[in-house]
Image (cartoon, rainbow, N blue to C red; front, top):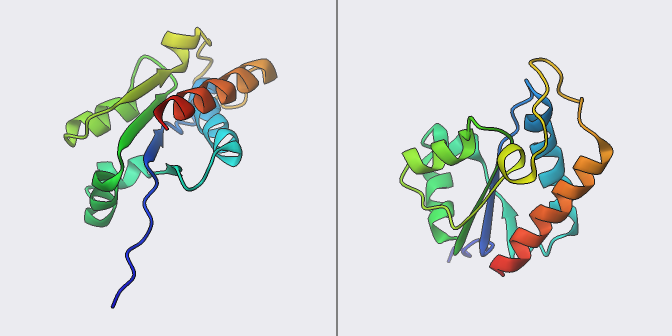
Length: 132
């Protein structure tokens, strides 16, 4: 008998668009926040696999209780991908719109401030804990 894999309650999807500072910041901050979060309750899910319509990833996403999406800028790529695939977002954070972190680029992936990284990590942790 096959053991069913554990699916965390919170599915965290994020932008990792490296053409700008906030795209990179979103991805790096999400990884840093995840280090500090309860892994039983929170999981990093793959936005690209959802966009590519990978059935296993879709099925796993549907088992999560809360969908959390994090974007870097006004393009809202993560949000648009999830919505296009009919996935309802329960919690959303946009670094440029919600935290007023400036987008620098193109081709300036590391031009963000250390304090913006720390602030973003804390906001992501707060968002995930609110969902628990």
